[in-house]
Image 1 (cartoon, helix red, strand yellow):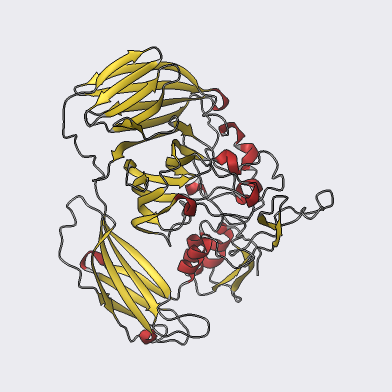
Image 2 (image 1 turned 135 degrees about the vertical axis):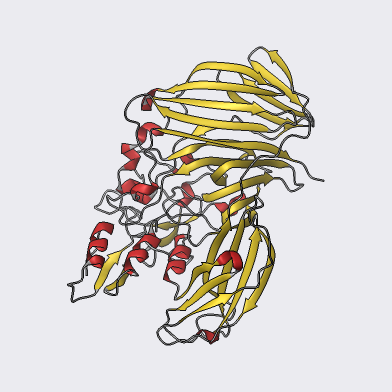
Length: 525
């Protein structure tokens, strides 16, 4: 019964043929804060061998005590609170559960539920609607459950249906959903989702409760950007340090020539931005980041974007398009950073971001992206990507592709010690609009990581010490919401919270990065 074994140790034991005892981890998958990364990988190993039995996640519940601050605002207290700061304590190390003290689930619990499910689905020929249902219960027939399926095109449901199964424990059966015949090479995304629900409720689980899910990717679209309806180029004007571009559709884009920043993007005189588009290389460290000493090791990225030095700014034309290229040095990390803006005739703004190490080494990145500030009224968030709850590169098997929506307030998960939150992976497009439907849309030329919050990493990051920070210390903006549009973000990890980082495939250790997306206005009918 090992405690927090490495993945390699698990693989080694799983591959052995001379063992006489089952492998039961007395503790594993430390669930402290925003964690539970690479949980699927654990069970890929566990299910590969009969003698790999499983383990006990540490922990189930955050062990905090409800109290109030000097302003009467409630928060969950932990070690060092209640006047005990000068006594020996372990800070928030008992805040390491899958649920909060009042049993509110952490987003990571959804991943655990998905990986643990005893009704599982495997692909046969999902493009034809064919898949396998496996009953891994010990004593329950699947006749007690209702099943449904959905066919999605670009995240929108185009067909659905239900089915029933009489499948004894330990058995598996092929199922064919009668999906419509479509050309899955037509440049669109197609997904097939399958669900299992309880038919009857009991004293613990209600009827119609989802107990299992799976989603099969049938086809991936090209993510091409539609050509503009007009070819009349924008009118360019220079006034002091302002470069202004007036496009069709009454769209105006302004660039500050002193720093190369796009600071205005207006439609009919109404500005969509509430500040400049700026690079984003840092996230508020998670508890696993702290344990991995990432808050110190990667500290150079904390202000690398803020301290960038503009070395060149150019304005070129390409037929009907204007192209602005800003080149920067990042002294703290010895790298070159280039932001290129393409101004299309119809007012769409293409953004391309490139980072390249100037030497042989560049510190591991927390994230590679850009931040767009908008005014607080644009708090309706809608996206096509994985959701609906937050998800990360190493914790997204439970998060399905679809079109999701919600308020910006609901994208922030109140981890008891504030930290990174709200990310969505594999995002094709996202919008932020006000209640009239007016706002902004970003469309990736490749899948994006996107979040919409009313806080920045600085609001959640105490610096080099945790400083007894709580949810009541987070000041949510009354003026701005921030649309974070990233190529990638560091994985969460979860092997433990006192040294091991995310697995190497979820780290950002390349010497160069590049991505692009299109910004366009959303105008109500």
